[in-house]
Image 1: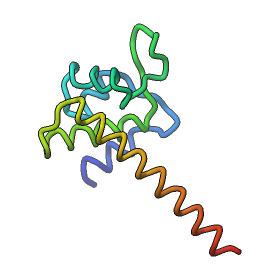
Image 2 (image 1 turned 180 degrees about the vertical axis):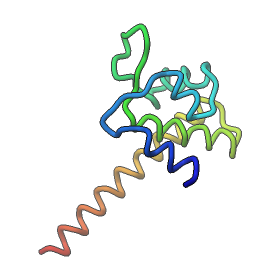
Image 3 (image 1 turned 90 degrees about the vertical axis):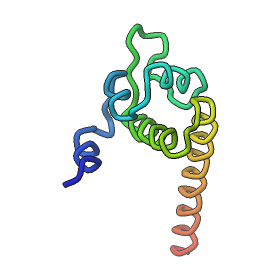
Length: 106
């Protein structure tokens, strides 16, 4: 079993993860992740809380951000822009699958 599979198994989809775990999973610095929060690419469960926590899906976003940062040397603002595009593509793919499923059933 590879590391990514183990990480996927350790995070409960309905759970929350903390800031330190997000830093560890992403490989990004505290400042880079903070900028992603400021740009809206990562959204804390309660932004006003003294210690931020995030939905489990944020781990996927953070890992993607870390990979994009390493592969393309993007700064945090560039990462936020690309992450918004990735989220939009994922949403469009979900809609397309739903449309195809409806067309196949009808």
